[in-house]
Length: 443
Image: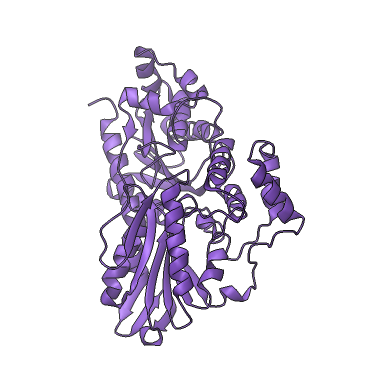
């Protein structure tokens, strides 16, 4: 095993502990309890006898796992439902239909699922309870274009935004104003049924209006905000003309806005976050301590351009290795959050792989230290890898194979670089999606 093999094994153990803590099914099991006729969701208590029917709807990468736990808790009290998740992330359910669709770019299967969900919610009435299961990825998995737009319009805009370096909140501000269901519009469809939502958050700060573009949440953003995002990233003239016209008409008051705070459609809606990156990070920290590391959680709000953050992570790793701080070695420093990538090259990769490749350049020649960056959903960007390992030998091992780390980074081709070295991390679907976890291990 190459130098640092034990550090790699420990990094995977630590990461998997974080995944278990944030798993969609486990998170719902912790939050949703039934005591006879009484259903408890956090501090909310409802009597099941008050409702004629109980429906389950869900969207996001963790939604099928979440629905599995709902079926375990409620059994035959569930009258039916539908959830949509990413291809490969589904699980068999007895009473809830599981549909799979494409991500990160929306596809026709997602549009079909969205129409099925709208039909179900339109049929729900005031005597009904709707359990809504929301997790990251729901924006792409539940695409229902607004009037006058096509799915291809939404695909084009999403692709441009994801390559621009825009934050998830900025991306979703645009998505909400091109959708028939996002930005609180699904709450309008479900009204007047009672809606109780359980949320696995992939948005820093757990902003309910931003997670999956907030289909059941009041939308504080406007058409003008959406236009401003396109202007900020130089996309106004690149998006389809139909999209530009809709946003301009909306900003001029010619198209109805998304439902805002105080709208009556939200009076019977209650959402509760049941898992976030904080849960994953805290569990990772605890596992590292169990393995004998001195630990420190540096942040759960990591943001920024992935390659720039990678350089900072490398600097932290050097400080730990050379100066024995901020904690004594053996050390495990944990960071949680989500970076972005501005795509300028034609390569393939994800934000975690790009962060790791940038970190590798800063670690070059350093011994006894490892940086590992992981996407908690198991898929980093448009790849099947969760992330990658980087250490002081990464750049040299690449060079021995004729791979120039700087050139691969400039081309946004981190996947090819790490695949050639055998340093990609593949977990498969994880049943959750709570941003990213970055580990620095020093022995």
